[in-house]
Amino acid sequence: MKKLLPLLIACCCVSAVAPAFSADQVTLRFSWWGGKARHQATLDALKAFEAKYPDIKVKAEYTGWDGYFSRLTTQVNSGTEADLIQTNWNWLTLMSKKGDGFYDLNTLKETLDLTQYTPASLATTTVNGKLNALPLSTNVMAFYYNQTTWQKAGLELPKNWDELIKAGNVFKEKLGESYYPVFAGEQDSMLMIFSWMYQQNQKPMIDIEKKRLAWDHADIVKALGFYKTLIDNHVLPSTKVVASYGAKITPHYELKPWMNGEWAGSYNWNVLYPSQSITLKNPSDLVLGPYPMFPDARDAGQFQKTALMYSIGRNTRHPKEAALLMNFLVNDPAGILPGGLERGAPLSKIADATLREKGILKDSDPVIAGLLQSFAVPNAFAATPFMEDMQINALFTAARENIDYGKMSVEEAASDLEQKANRILRRIMR
Image 1 (tube, rainbow, N blue to C red):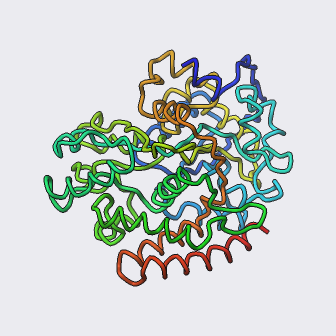
Image 2: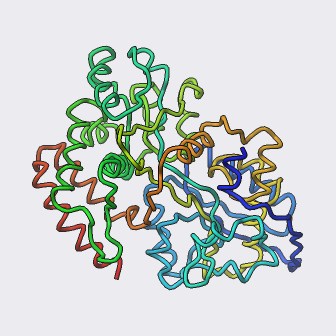
């Protein structure tokens, strides 16, 4: 852990948090998204909180990923958002450009122990001097594979892009049409394509200063051409195949092809390993794979960022109680243990120590191993939240669908994406 700990946390002493509250009953609302494993872990933590603080009740509002952001924006605009909210890093650029989209956590230091976090980690969620959120973990995109299915195909896990591409037709010939080496969802596909591109030219996708795509037309054609290569070589299920399983509204790890081992891998956030593995017949079948690199690549282009966050609604009537709940979940062993690694390897020093002491957090754990792998490869690329903008992701999904359904050629899809993306970036970055 010597390599990981300095990257995640700072050695700080645990400060005592002893807030005073009214004896009146308070009900807090807490909203989050996730899979079944995260839901149950969080509910268990909330039971422990209510047992410790019987004068505070928590109403849990949890869903899957789809629709969460749009529902949250509607609530924020109408002043009806929850007291404690699970948020995403890129939302700060959309919902709090001036730092006033969420409650300033700096004003709650008497209740919320911020000394458990490095100044650098808190800086990632600070806007205009206001701490808009508490970063929970570091998140990275990684390849996880169902090793049993790969063994059935007679293949070792791919070490480079060529081996990944060649595996597609082997899967099809040896295992059948429904078997694919890897699955990548909407945003995941874009980030995989970006990594492949960046390894070759170290060129960012978005030009922050010019507020437009840094990729020119030839770059976009090349990127979408790589996607078509993956589809043509049976590496990924196409959007048409995925749509036949209803994956637009259901996470891939809750679909039969994944649970049966037919989709034999994923390119996804390391923090989602528990949700992905638990739905398999044998969860330990899912293992971290090598990160594919070109032989002469100087940078992996692997998207690494502040992962999930907790924010307090700006319209809350109970900021101190909400801060107490937040502090319990991230800095109190009674709240830390039920949550485990469901939101990644914690940035909180006391959370890290607590989970290690109980044997829950180990360097060999696939969630942690994904981070260690990312730290080991050349990966100086600086992620920008605009790459996670939902409108930009939707454009890439539309381009993939147009290619998969034969509505557009790669060239036509590239032109359409370029025009619309630059228009959106001018609007959201002004």
